[in-house]
Length: 318
Image 1 (tube, helix red, strand yellow):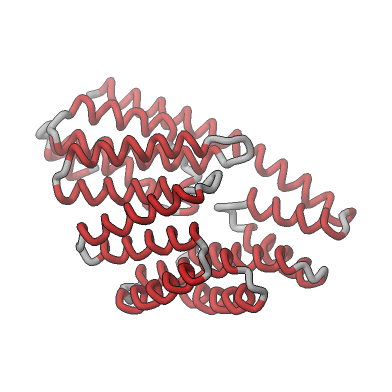
Image 2 (cartoon, helix red, strand yellow):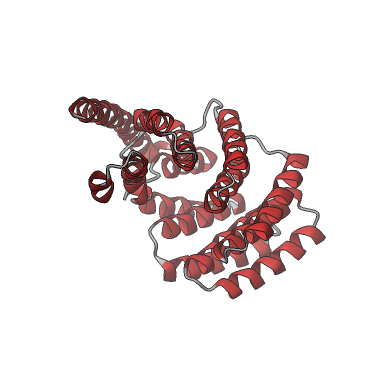
């Protein structure tokens, strides 16, 4: 066990060093763009501010960059940029668990998107509010709102938006422990999204994750393995130039967690431990800036491992 602890410490040290180097590179890019801003005009300035907002995901400065982007978009009367800034600001408050601001800014953003008939942006924002209602345990409100949005997306023949709202409805039924109904909605969502597959879409990844997660509750180990394999395939497809490596590595991390749970269900501790080591190898402490629960997922994986090997003391402390 001492050897295992040493390996664990070495992995964490290695990952931390890599994360520091990556963050240093991002900070340099941020500083360079900020320094150039006074010299930029029109579209170039809008694009630079949008880049700042993306680079600063997980950083406290992001809110300020988004507000600068919003103000500049309004000054230039750039409707697309203003809509994007509204969406980013809603997402920022969502990630910060600032419920009041999510509802206030979200409703403003929805009115703006509807006014300018920016339907995909509109439906994305509505889905965020629905998920906020669900998180706040306003399940009936979330379901009623989701059904309204579903009918509107179908009427406007917005295929990908319809697929996304079907996944939201599936998640609502999952929260009610109605797993068969939830599975039906997720599979319908995946089938529909395949008709209009969007490059870089994370819909498939999140849907397969939830489907596998539900199988863990119902002890459907074979089906859980199939859904997890599909999740890995979809993450592989996300690896395209220009996309955030940190983001897809987080998806891999979650997929490894599913594998750990799967092998635990089959009482196969050595295979579970291999998946834990895979997860450790890509663990990035910066994820915790966006969702602190990721720090506990790794501990939870070890807790599962100790439980199936019968080490209940370590399981309790994990």
